[in-house]
Length: 232
Image (cartoon, rainbow, N blue to C red; front, side, top):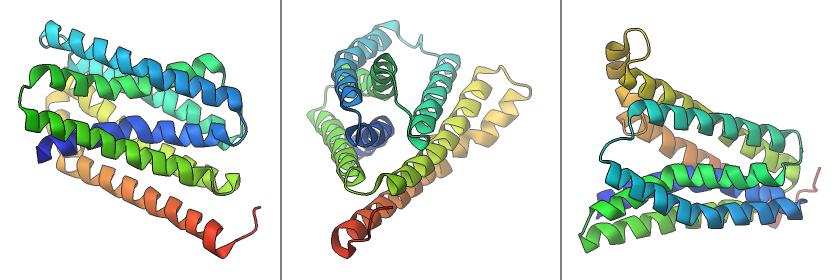
C-alpha cells in the first residue's frame, strides 16, 4: 500500500502542481482563464480513463520513444505557460484547456492503467490516498499563491517551472536513450538511470524541488499574513 501511495503521490504531484500555479496566476486577474482551466481539469478525468484503458488493452504498445515524445510536448507546454506567467501575459482559452488536459492526463493515464491492472483493495486505497494527498498539496499551493503579491508569486512560479523543466529534460534524455535513437544509447541509458524519475537521484530531486518550493511559498504566505509586508 505504501508503494502505491508514494507512486500515486509522485505522479499526482507532477500532474497537479503546475496546474495549481497556473490556476493561482489566472485567479488574480483572468476570469476566463480560470473557467478554461476548470474545463480542462474536468475533461482530463475521462481522457485519463480512456487513455489508461487503451494502454491496458494495447499490452505494451506505449514504448520509450512515445514516452520521450510525450515528455518533450510537456516540456514545451510547461515553458510556454511559465513564460506567460513571467511576462504577465494572457493565455488563450484553447491553450489553457489543452494544457490542463495534457499535463494531467499524461500522468493520470498511468494511474488509470494501474487501477485496471490491480485487484487488491489495499493497493487501490493507496493509489487513491496518494492522488488525494497530491491534490491537497496542489490546493494549498493555489491558495497560498493567490494570497501573496503577484511579483513574489511569479518568482516562485518561475523557479518551479525552471526546476520542473530540468526534470523533464532529464527524463526526455533517458527515454530517448532507452529507445536507442541517440549515439551510444545503451551506455548513456545506463548512466542516466539513477537520474530518471524512477531512479534514486531523480526521486530525491523531486522531493527537494517540492520541499524547497513549498517552504518558499509558505514563507511568503506567512510573511504576507503575519508580518504585513506592503505589496510591491
